[in-house]
Amino acid sequence: MSSKKKPSPKHYTLYLDESTTYRYNPFTHKKSDEHFCMAGIIIPDDDYNILQSDINSLKNIMWNDYPVPEDIILHQKNISDAEDGRLDIKKFPEYKRFSKNVNRKIFYSELKTIFTKGIYTVIGGSIGKSELDTAFSISGKNNTDEYLICLQMLLENYCHFLCLHNGIGRVIYESRELKADERLRDKFYHIKLMGSMYIDKSTTGKRLLGIDIVEKSANCAGLQLADFVPNSFAREHTGISQSKYNIFATLKYFRYDGNIGDKDRFGVKYML
Image 1 (cartoon, rainbow, N blue to C red):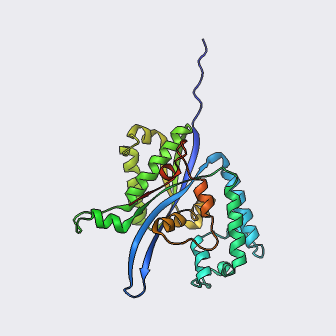
Image 2 (cartoon, rainbow, N blue to C red):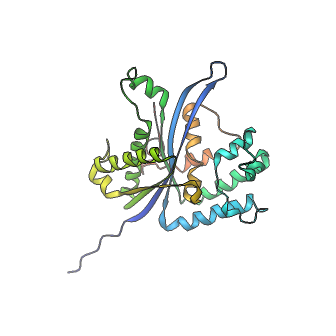
Image 3 (cartoon, rainbow, N blue to C red):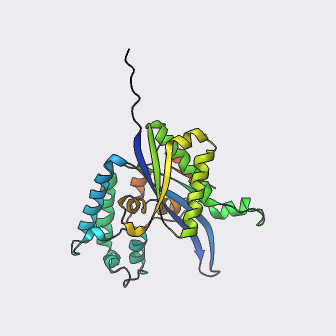
């Protein structure tokens, strides 16, 4: 009697970035309503070549006067700085063109087109750091950890996604600095080993493969697309308006919904 083989799990990668937003009082020079967001995109590994091609096409549209546009690394902050007149033109001369509305409009229109293929799934977590500290620091007697909280929220939902799609997946995060990278790696493997509130350790151990921390200079297409995800959600959570040209409506539409239509819970979860 023949026995059916179980289908092999599909491989996915979650490309992650982070963003912090806050309100700033120009009179007191103090920050308030600080929110931290960790978010990104889930990509089937089999479709990564499509993303790479789409990102290179976008670069060729925006920098067709450069000899090798593919070597330019996409960075949302540089576009925002050009819009606000804060760009270091000597350091990032290729971004000067984004001081013009027409170029930002074209860029975000092309970026939206990349998402509309429906290959990529948005996931993340955002927390009110100011409220977290107020509620749980207990007058400085407890060290709050927004990284661990956000990472736990999104890894729970990533594991949910992987279970639903019979998948296994890794995480790729953009490098910050050595100590911060090691702390993040420790937090990831803590969750993988111990599980979380809703996902048990046997599931995290089986579904999560590992975490790679990659330098921005590596020109990783997945990280460059993920770079445009967390700031928009952090802005909404803080109550700050979006930039004139953005893809926030598109990002919200492609959030993971847990297969029950609940994108606020399973896509990008807000806490505090």
